[in-house]
Each structure stands twice: as structure tokens, then as C-alpha cells.
Image 1 (cartoon, protein in one colour):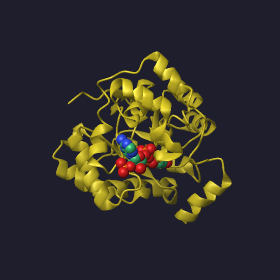
Image 2 (tube, helix red, strand yellow):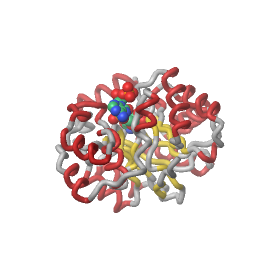
Image 3 (cartoon, protein in one colour):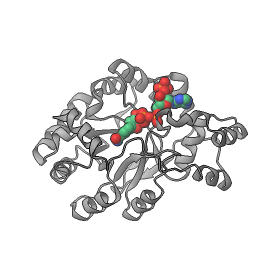
Image 4 (cartoon, helix red, strand yellow):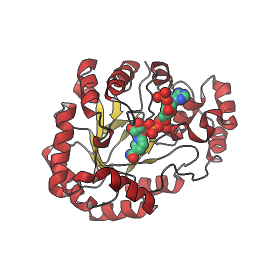
Length: 282
Ligand SMILES: NC(=O)c1ccc[n+]([C@@H]2O[C@H](COP(=O)([O-])OP(=O)(O)OC[C@H]3O[C@@H](n4cnc5c(N)ncnc54)[C@H](OP(=O)(O)O)[C@@H]3O)[C@@H](O)[C@H]2O)c1
């Protein structure tokens, strides 16, 4: 099995450049898929309070037999727990459900509500050693600068939507400048916009006998973006991890760069989206 390259967080900890996402999985799917993923070689798993499957992920981790210190487990705090006190309750709840003594990374899932209060709660978890690294998700550049400027403990990661149609080129550079790792969610745009039929990605894949999914993940990691593809299919779970035996050329990286349309799946600047989030929360 190939060694997975790591990125180094601002805490000094190492994070695998590829992980496994479990959004929109039932408990049964999450338990089975995480077990498959760990068997395939993934060591990093990305879940969240709002996915409702932390317990199932925890069962898979326990059943995998892989030592805890070889795994990198991420979860996220939901908006309902956004205050200093509630954030502490939130990460304790995540730890309890996952059956873990610590999380490798815990993120503020959304940049809204009392995010600064919640961040202080996460800082307490970091101080206690229960959260080995803390970070953010879906923060735009201004929100990231603002939190980074005011925080006692700087965010280690920003997890943002990133795929060939929404490449986040500016955000990538700004995060790099701040020493924050860019982690990309929905690397396949959840299959939207016929991404798996794209001719440019397909022709690059043919050259290496790789699928479009593999080309996308390779492009992500070659630009230094941590990628967390989701699949419930054991064959695709393996396929998405089999990306360490080929390398895209500069010209191919440029061809993929040309696909960017800044096409968002969700728009965090749209009040309707905020309303949607709060309707699910309160
Ligand atoms: N922070 C946030 O707000 C946020 C938001 C969204 C997602 N995320 C994280 O990012 C992870 C990934 O994003 P996502 O789950 O939204 O979507 P995604 O990974 O972009 O796409 C998943 C879709 O692609 C399909 N697929 C996977 N591998 C494939 C392959 N090799 N060939 C063809 N189809 C394939 C899956 O189907 P099958 O399952 O049938 O294979 C599923 O329909 C999530 O699971 C979650 O951990 C975070």
C-alpha cells in the first residue's frame, strides 16, 4: 500500500492529504463505509455533529483494529452549540459519541452566530488536550482574517467547498499566507454538472488509465489541498484512494485550472441559505 503524504498543521501535527467524508450517510452506511475505507488504507475520517453518524463512525473505528494514534479523526460543531459554554458541551458530546478521548481536528462548521464564543470553547478543548487541533469551515476570506486576527489559538484548517468548477484559487493563496491548511469539501461537486462526464478530465484520465474521480483527487493533492471524497461503494472507496502512482504534468494542471467557473454548490453569502441553516437548527 502506498504511503499517504501528509500536510503539517500549525500545531506541528501531521494530517493525511486524503481523508474519507461521511456526509449524507445513514448510520449503517457510515459504519460499513468507514470500515471499508480504513481497510483500503485511509487513515483520516471527516464527520460532523450535524451528520448524525458520529456513533457509527466510532463503532467502525473501534472495529477496525487500527491503533488510535494512526488515525486522524475530524468532527465539527453545529450552530446550535455556538457559545463558549455550549461549544465545550458540543465537543464532549462528539467525543462521547465517537468513543474517543481526543479528536485530531474539530471545526466550527459554519461562520455564523456566536462563532467567536464558540471558538473560545474550542480553544479550551485545545488547552485540555481533547482537541489536538481546531479549525473552521465555510469561512470566507474576511471572516477567516477576522477570526485569525482575534483568536488566541489560530485556526489550523479551513474546510471549504473545492472542486474543478469552484477551485478557490484566491482563498487558497490567502490561507497559505495565514499558515492555515486548505481542506476541500465535495471534491466531485457531489456529481453535479456532469463532472464525471467532463471531456478534459476524461482525456487526462485515459492517458494514465485513471478515472475522472482519480484525476480530480490527484489535482487536489498536487495543489496542496487536503481532499475528503465520500463514497458508500467499496470499489469507489478503493478507487478514490488509488491516486499515488501517477502525477499530472504542469500542462494538465493548467488544463484543469481552466475549468474553474467559481460555481458554488452552496452560497454562504445568500440570506436564503442562512435561513435554511437556521430552520434546520432552531
Ligand atoms: N464542511 C462542510 O460544510 C461540508 C459540506 C459538504 C461536504 N463536506 C465533507 O466533504 C465530504 C465530501 O463531500 P460530499 O460527500 O458532499 O460529496 P463528493 O465527495 O463531492 O461526492 C460524493 C458523490 O460522488 C459519488 N462518487 C464518489 N466516488 C466516486 C467515483 N470514484 N466515481 C463516481 N462517483 C463517485 C458518490 O456516490 P457513491 O457514494 O454512490 O459512490 C456521491 O454521490 C463529505 O462527505 C463531508 O465529509 C463538508
